[in-house]
Structure formats: C-alpha cells, structure tokens
Length: 288
Image (cartoon, rainbow, N blue to C red):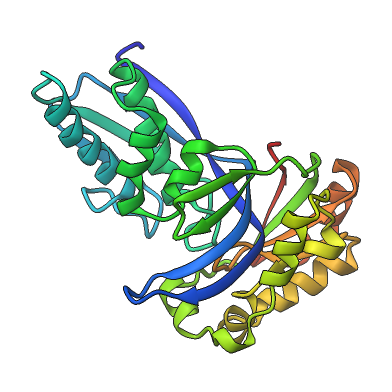
C-alpha cells in the first residue's frame, strides 16, 4: 500500500429496526435490517506522519482524538503493539464529510470501520475479521456491521450479524431535514410497551421472504423521534406524495429514506422536493 492512500466510507440505512428490550447495563437490544448505500465520506491516509491525527472541516465533527476514526486508529495501534513486534506507527487522516451528522446514517461508525480495514490491510492482516469486530464493538454498535459491509440482520447490541439476501437493488432518496438528533435522547424517549416492529422482522426472517417496502419497512424509534422533530413526518409525507413505495426513518434519525421503483422515479421525486430548500436530498441506491 502506498504512503498516501484514499478510501471511501459508505453510509448505511436501516430498512427495519425493532427494539426488543433494555439490558441491565443500559444498552438496548435490537433486531435491524441494515444495508450500505452509495453515499460516501472520503478519507485520505498519510502513513508518513509521526503521530495519529485527523483533520476535518465539517461543522460538528471533532478534528482531534475525540473523532471516532482517530479513536479506531489508536485502538488498532495499541492492539497491534500487543500482538506483534511493531512498536508504533503514525497516521495523518483527512476526512471529507458528505454523510450528514446526526442523521442515523452511521457516518462516524463507517469512518471508524474504514480506518480499521485500511490499517488491517496496511499491516498484512494481523487480525481476523472476528478479532477486528471485537476491537470495533466497544467503540460503537454499528462499527462491526460496517466491517462486514453487506446487507444483514444485526441483533443484540450490534455483535450478531447474519447475512440477508432478500434485498433487490433499490433506488433511494435520503432526505436530511438539516437538524440532527441525539441517539441517547431518542432512546430515552422510547416507550418499550409501544414498540411494534419485532413481529414484522421475525416474520421476514422465519418465512425467508424477499423484502417488500410496502410490507416490511418499520422503525420503533420513529415515534419518539417524530415527537422531537416533526419535520421527519413532513418528509415521510412528501416522499409518499412523490411516489415512494415506502418510507422509513433510518436508525435513530433524523434522515428519512424513500424507496422508489427505479432511478428515474427517484430523480423525478428529487426534483419534486426541490422547493424544500432547508432539506438536504441525496439520490442513492442500496449496495446489495
């Protein structure tokens, strides 16, 4: 690998998300259907640097060792030093953000996973995929999924990943209302007695059916998120009016995903949403 390396870091969408309980340690148990999409951040890696650092000009994104990508690099370095004769290494990263922050699209987790994968290749794969996932999980529940990178049913607190092959290459619009949501606050507002998505997801798994937008889209976190940010419902309504086969908030929000029959339909819908200049609209597709 050359001393200067560049890599793309994809966003993800949750096409179904069921919250099935809360553990004694405070973590919520989930079952979710996740897929990556072709909306990317860009990371440049300079291995000639004497220390681990990151630069990012995006508002609200740490440009120091609080950044999740930087924390992933430090965690990898420390594990590498314990496992091999390598004493240390430096890395300077330049992160260019396109994935909105606080949108439920996993940008920070994707950045961290991309760093772990690039470093594992750089040092000739000292860690197995399982070991890399174990390194990743304490940093964030979505990071092991991004290491896997294919459509999957993810359960527990992110550590259980089961491949899912029932998705077709769908065209998407991802709409960010311009305001992010705090994951912790959305979960705190969730009433577990009112969740309803677990049955849909389990039926999808047990019957091994292909995913259908009009049937299986469901997110238990939508209700509390909409109470906090009514624009989410306005976006869902607008996407439906523009012909979306189905809509869903991704993760803990605030981005909303609309699924369309094809790219042309998605493009027409994007043009129809152009009057909402406060919304950021991304045309994308599932990576299946």
